[in-house]
Amino acid sequence: MQCVILAAGKGTRLRPLTENIPKPLVKVAGKTLLDHIVSSLPSAVDELIIVTGYLEEQIREHCGQEFYGRKVTYIHQSEQKGTADALWLCKDLLKGRFLFMFADDLHGANDIARATSYTRSMLTLTTDTPEKFGIVVRHPDGTLAEMIEKPEHPPSNLASTGVMVLDDNIFKFDPFAVETKGEFYLTDVIQQYAKEFPIAVVEQNLWIPIGYPEDIEKAEAILGSLVQDRRAKTC
Image 1 (spheres, rainbow, N blue to C red):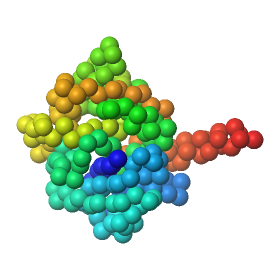
Image 2: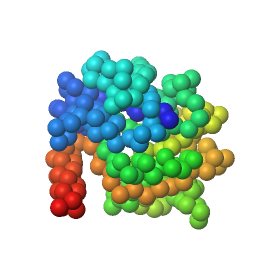
Image 3: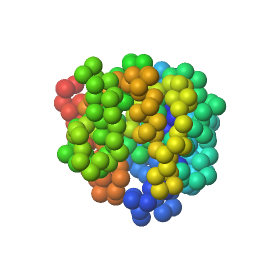
């Protein structure tokens, strides 16, 4: 199974940490975000497609041609034109089902594995600030009904956390029909796609978004607690 990881952004909100290194290589608890993310992937993932841009040579040097035993292919995104643009740059490389995620959020390995057990899925988590995220509304059968990016009046408090299992049928849809401030987002494409190819909405247990410098300390505290819990259970 292939995994597309978007890692091209400048990480402006994380400055000054990202002035000289790309955001995916910022360290949390002694490991880069990319190391945390890739080491959490299920064994079914045997190929990584990393979309790079800002300071991309550092990411290429860090990951090489094989990272955590997985073949790595790099795709260059020359302009920051959004998530849909980034995925469409990978179009010719993708076959069948694939995992899609961002290089700046941490997720539980068990949650990612559960997502891949569905034909198509997206991970979500309840949030107290739904206006800051892409918000998901479900059909009665638990599949995606609607997805709204940072709504002024959120119809639910279930946020998409960015991990999705998709397939190459998504490329049947036009990603460039709606432009927002010069960028093309996956939100509109996903809604069209889900009407023909149902997407299971899967609630996860662990999501640690890294957006600002203060999030690093929060993430380290959460990860430290998880390690202590695991140790306590084995004693």
